[in-house]
Amino acid sequence: MNNYIFGYLAEIKCNNYKQVLDEIAGKYGIGLKEILTEQLFQFTEKYLPNKNQTNFVFSMSDSAERVEADYLIDYLDYAPEMQCKFPSSGKDRLLILIDILKDMMIQSKCSKLVISLTDSGYIYSYKSIVFAYLSEILLDDFEKNQGVPDTLYEIICE
Image 1 (spheres, one colour):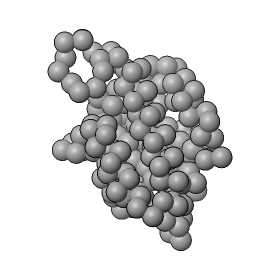
Image 2 (cartoon, rainbow, N blue to C red):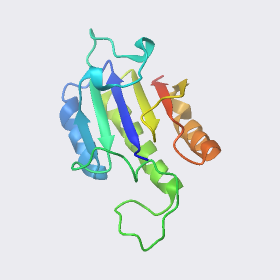
Image 3 (cartoon, one colour):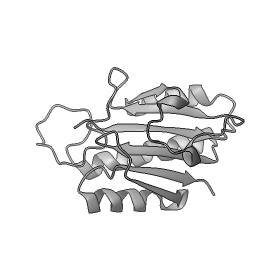
């Protein structure tokens, strides 16, 4: 299965947010591509971005050359000798994703991040959480599912 990350940062207050997000993508060696709102598949009306706000709608991938986030959100542990820029531990890769999301939210000065993490392209559950619990909830959801939770998260900045 392919792992997908789609989402958007809402009500951005940072003037040079595209440059800031490019720097974050470079820092972690990931792909962060701006996409159309119409490409937020399975986002219900409630979770779509407000067109009257400054938003950044994106897909995130393992690298600029890829579309999927196969390694970044795969929770399986790989053999240590595997050739990959990410750690072999699924939990360690998830912690990197969490760091990326936190950097994106803090540095863009957004009001919220809405993001889907799926291994099928389908969203089966929706959760609204506050930024302070981002790490705890994602780690718990991935552990319970022993993989990608196929969930859309609305992460509210406090």
